[in-house]
Image (cartoon, rainbow, N blue to C red; front, side):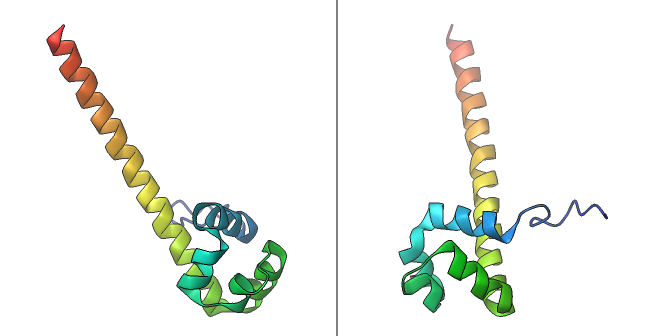
Amino acid sequence: MQEQPNNPLHGVTLKALLENLVERHGWEELGRRFNIRCFINNPSIKSSLKFLRKTEWAREKVERLYISDQKRLTKNQVRNKMRAARRAYKSSLEE
């Protein structure tokens, strides 16, 4: 098995990716963003996985949303760490 350090989807199953997006955005938002029937009419993980595995264009759209979410989360985590470090530094100066 070849390592893929620059592939943000390496090691992430389609099921885990979809569950993450449903948890973060919900079915209604996914249906609004993508206008895909499996997200709109009686949505479920099982039916969505079946559709996404067969339909490359839909899977690519969902994967792009997941990647952008992960980048945004990482960026926010770094920003929060920097803010916390600044606050700690300022409070150490005040003591």
